[in-house]
Image 1 (cartoon, one colour):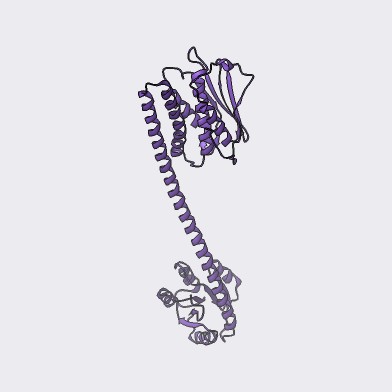
Image 2 (spheres, rainbow, N blue to C red; image 1 turned 30 degrees about the horizontal axis):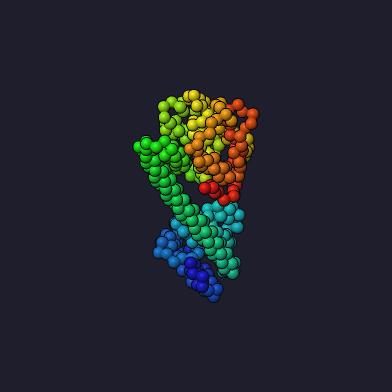
Length: 361
């Protein structure tokens, strides 16, 4: 669209009036092109370069409304000012509904030309506004499409990262398991088995993220069930046959899920080792939610405070539990009213910024 010398197509079978329009609008900076019938006008529009159209109503062949309908079917058609000698307001309503940008009553002496100048200027302004709006909407849609494509690509990459990390951690856990089985020293075997469980707890989070629709959160109940199943499979004999879980559906961020998984792994394995010296027993893991408040407990009905101390113990498990609890902005507390051993952690569902996590050597 030319802003300096806009090109107007004047479609009217009145040659004399067309010359008046051409001279009048030329003085206002318009380049006026005349077509004396609808077919000629449509042909000229098809050639391109027309910025605005003034369209007469009554002409031989196609009338103004028929031409207007065909103009509106042209992609990116120029704006149209409908011109008629009729005073009937119904024609104006019909023309505007059909897509005309403005409506003007003409006379045979050309007195309407100043009004036509105002009308075509207004139609051009409206066209520029529409184009700017359409361009802005197109850019918004394009930006949304680019963002959606980037988000989809990011999601694929994150899934692949979680898949690879999960696989790598699983390989590490398997190597630790093989090394533990090949060791002849019980303390080394126990240390390697404990390390294997901790690695597996982290790997399980990445497996959950890889298969989840939401990469920003983990269903904690499902994660704990999978983690306990891993512990059951990795345990010797049937010592884990009575390990149970009661958990409400809770979503939590992956970092906190890792901390919870490591805590559960440590406390469950501790119960396996020390709670039932005479044989396997029940170990219960329970997760409850009330609003944003979560409570996690690991309990057994074993010997409790009467447990014999293990001279081989380094206290690493207890330090790990304390460090992971700090990531949840809480502490692991022992329930004094439970006959066996019950450790309880109360924390918030939403992520909070904890103090830096350290594990004392």
